Length: 199
Image (tube, rainbow, N blue to C red; front, side, top):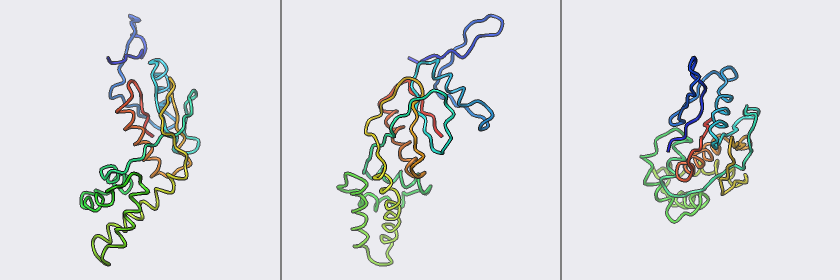
């Protein structure tokens, strides 16, 4: 059942006007249009849960929110690793797929994938295409993994009614993207009537 939210009242008749959150987008100029106020009102009136992400200092304008621990679910399958690299580097990785698949075999964590990449890099013939691909993978994983290991992530996503905010200001943009993706994947699979506010 689609949840209806009171938007306001019809001029003249005074009849209530309801709206659905499906495919809703709120846009406007930063600090001038009232996007945050609108979202906060809709979430509160709808009695629903929302997840927002603080990615820059001083960014969140919600007046009432509950701060929650950043949630991250690590994966090491080749589809996930390929999409992480694509999202971070903004480059299609189809050409590199066979090398990514090989690097992910037997891995349970991204650290395992990194160890595999380093081993495959040692075995690769100098000046070969494989050496170039594994060098790139090695550098990407050297950038991301230490940040993931340094930060304390929750393995549970526990929300209260209203706006729930994850503070991601202490991690790089690459790690912020990983956390947001992890939250979205969990929400799509497990949650209902939950709004995800994308920064």
